[in-house]
Image (cartoon, rainbow, N blue to C red; front, side, top):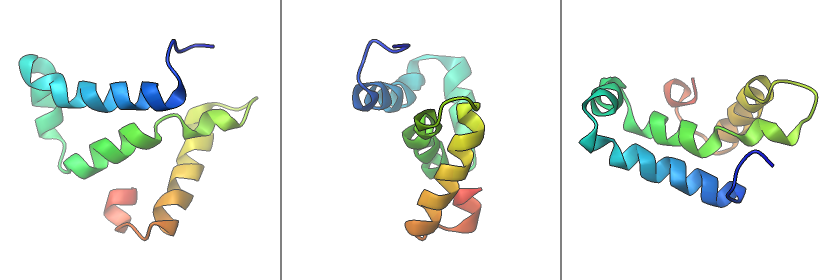
Length: 81
């Protein structure tokens, strides 16, 4: 009920907004300061996965779920971190 979009639409909007940061010097600099664009997009893709569990901060639950997803996808440990 927090978002006006579906989970998929919300995630796609977030990823589109990451691409659109070129016009904003602050966000472009912030994005460019991140060592791996892959990590940024992965974080965007998985940022709300923890909302499936109620009664606990979704950031904590999400970190655990994301770690498991990264393990199953056999991603590099530094990307997972």
